[in-house]
Length: 221
Image 1 (tube, rainbow, N blue to C red):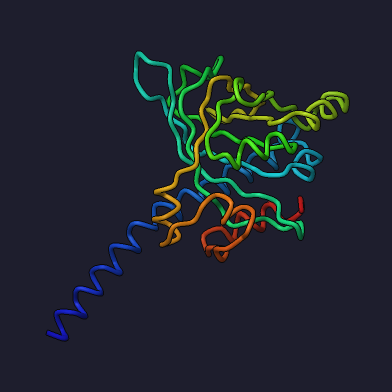
Image 2 (spheres, one colour):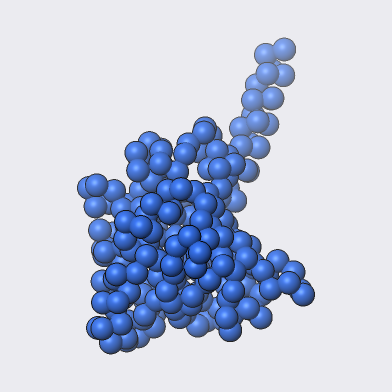
């Protein structure tokens, strides 16, 4: 009986680890996207925006939802700036639909959104909003942009970028619906945690899989 209980516990533990590993991989991919977004000379995200944003949303590998329908779907993470200036543990969010401009024909797109002001932050904490309807989103400038363009972006609600086929550029995502992934957050952290619990109250400890991302973002506290 004892051996049977130990075996069952081992199987359960393995299953939990297997379930969380895919989320760890998503966080790792998010870090790869941010490294590319930061280091791409002349076409990366301006450091000024990273230092002043309230939160960063990263969606690796957003895919087309259908061959004839132009909608897209992807799940990614959000990290927020804490009161101390450090970054929070990641909360999982999803992005669905939207007009993707010239990128719409591509199978997979990496997306980065910076939440720049209080209005954008409040929309993020509502857990569900639509870009271009509930909140405005602007195609972000790159590091080679004029200072005037960067100054304008600093006043935006959300600035967004996309990477596909090696190219990284600002892209407006009107109509895209952003929502918190409640079930994924529960699966990953092993308990019910709201977006506020993760991004505002900083209740969960920093997962080991987010260590590299924290290093990547550390210059922009």
